[in-house]
Length: 135
Image 1 (cartoon, one colour):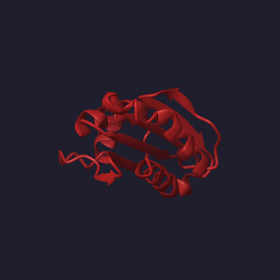
Image 2 (tube, rainbow, N blue to C red):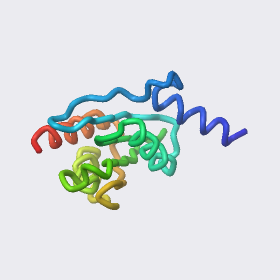
Image 3 (cartoon, rainbow, N blue to C red):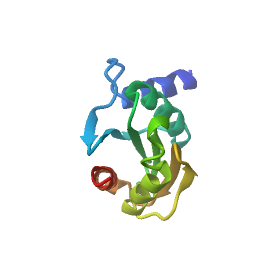
């Protein structure tokens, strides 16, 4: 039952199960699917980002989970066709810095980090969007 509840939360977080998914923006020459989610275990963000990349086809995914204590976890994902142009590690570091954190790491196609200030999730997404627009 807990697994079903977690699956329902993930589906709701990514667009309510309507089949539309999270909204997609244009960030320069890249498509960006960015979303802040609550009630999602940070460990589930990578799987959600993989699903979002599949929906997107080509682009960048940013997911930020804000916990009850205000801390945030961020995952950035870049589709394989774009890893030569943009690195998920660079993006997660930009997002983490906006959240009051430092560093972060992973691979060119998927990276994760955290930060103490989940209230700045929108600022983190805007910083990543601005970076992409400048590439």
